[in-house]
Image (cartoon, rainbow, N blue to C red; front, side, top):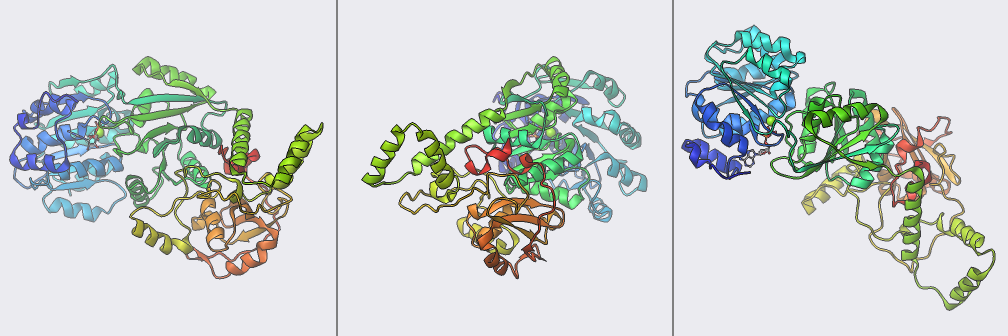
Length: 605
Ligand code: ADP
Ligand code: MG
């Protein structure tokens, strides 16, 4: 960001200067510098500037400082393509207009009409909203725009697109003639200026980077696979890229839910967002993302435009977008305000054409990467197992050493070692053989029965509840002297239905997806309440109304007792033995290839 101009050089009034300082903006961004005077003079503008470059304040500041007058009526209308963006932009107006008494009314669908009417009656000078609800208020005459001085089309190209054209034309037709019209976006396709011409008077075009619309701080990666954006592929990518927090985009609403469940089942803190969610859920999941209480939000393009969540390190195009504009805007949810970020695409054979179009239109050429093949994955996992075994080996007696040396010189040494491995290593408690490794950033909140405790723990530590993944957790330290427990089968190395694994028995819990059950939380519940070790628990299948779990057969009676009065989100768990009739879900969806995690082995491939 250049510091050619300062906020002082804008000649801001004292209250706005104070608000800017309070928000923490030290100097204006390029787009703010380039547009302030023109907007302050009352001219119409079309402004193109990269994602995350500070366009909101670029229109909010001059409007608050120069255009909005003290009289209490609606003077500025901002239209946004989504409710989430409308709320966010309303927030920026509130912050920057804090000492100007601007009064901002967010006007969007799914929220109470009366509450919005009250805000308008209370004398809001700025209305920020989505076209449908805005038009609703205009037609009902609950919104009086006879004194409107300026209209802003944030994400202008999207607002002028065919999808919004009808409502937008209706709204513009109801506004006073003399109003100023401001159009902002990172992308301005050619067709847009023709449409804009109908709504603006001699607009000044301010294009800051039309040939290079994506911020330089974003690196673009593309993973090719035959299936494109499948959940197992996504899980592999997460293992490789290890995003801190990401928006994951899908092309359909159904996919967002499915992918979010896949991530949850693999132990990640994930939620989904699409236009079918109830408004309070939309706000809830956005809140969880902003507060860093979920790490992955799986969304449709409802989150593609304008959303500003500064800590997102990654954007993942799980389904590749059809238009280059969508790619630019989705990717622009990371790398904001000069930060760095990574945009990752999962590319299937059908996406190649769109990938080419992206390069042609915006010169974006993602770095090609390949997903590890099943064989490569297995090799990595084997290497990790060997490392962890060697690392965990403690002191041995001289006698054992002598025997080992003799064994290794024997012609049949390999088979004998393999037998030992199968008997004593594969069946061993992971707690005993795993070296400490950094805790992956995964997993869901504590299960319902221990929630209170987890919360108080969080309060005490000043951080979120302990994050642990059922299938990925590690011991804090290796205890080589500890006796290794011998088992005669490895329940994890199988992809049977719960209960069919050797030495395991099926358990059915009377709660499932409908009660918000997640595999990760069930594993934790069994550990915390049932006192089970990780190796005592096999497969977990969360179904709509029930959850099937396999646990070590000899522990089942004790466990049934421990679970007798346990509730999960207020629903009795009512655990009972199951007779495992249902077919397993595709193994890969439940058992991610989580190298170097021996527990997640074979079934992943
Ligand atoms: P855009 O609309 O261009 O995508 P936003 O208006 O959402 O970008 O702003 C992106 C981020 O930059 C926001 O987090 C915002 O608070 C921050 N920002 C805006 N102006 C400034 C500034 N002058 N200095 C520092 N940060 C800024
Ligand atoms: Mg914006």
